[in-house]
Length: 399
Image (cartoon, rainbow, N blue to C red; front, side, top):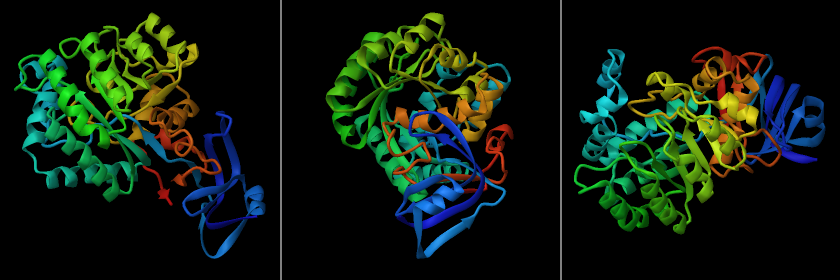
């Protein structure tokens, strides 16, 4: 019998992806934990038979509650300075994302405000956001740079992300999104790509887990993105792309060519792109909050799943196009607007997100050997976390 120092007992139900990658629901369940890792999980009688509780073990009576894995938010921009609330009001009155950007708003505004902010202010604001995300069930989060656009400020963003993650008690992975926009001091987009390769990547590689590009009309093209991503791969970083948010410009073929981990957004992806993703190992990350906020078509996750593609869900939390820190809200939109089942949405926001971040063996599942990240829901039916728009978990346990 295995020792356990924490037992979550009397669960009405437990929903997770099992060791074989299949979604399953267990009723009358329990979870036994030792030193922060799951020792036994499943039917209550089997868990009790598999472990011995330490004398000082904590026992949580979860009668009437259900459990799901800690949520994994694999695409966020939560480190930034200032606010862009006025842009929300402009969009409500009909202004487009591209018009706001052309007038100096959007990413350019966040670059200016983030550069002006002190590091202490960035840490404080990011920590506050991350604590809110944790309260809403997220236990693992990816944070991108991209509002610095210089070696100094991109590195500072990644450093802030790590510090804020520790202060909020969240597992944080970081992504160097140096190709998010062209900064005002750059001579041209091509000149900035050269600078990003020569200066930003070497400065940031040690502090980043992945690299990302915004491949979109008026931002960066295929050749520019390829150059940056190839250089990032030389630094040992996983590759990701903002793809097909407003137009299809070849991001999906490039992602497949380079063996990228994911393509994120996909609001403009058509049947050919769906077919290409389904035939590849590239994970499609849906960001329905951004699509809703910008009044864009929803990403075709239903068609992607039906075609056999791997998918994930994320908030895209940022100060402009996706002002949302809640993965339960994101899952609700995936079900109500994209046509996913609750099981598909939960899988995409847990095991799917973990796969994007390279954490397949430690996060996103309630399984023996995995980190003990557990979300308790004050309802015997785990689907209540998704069905209620804006639901909050009863408790988040990160042992």
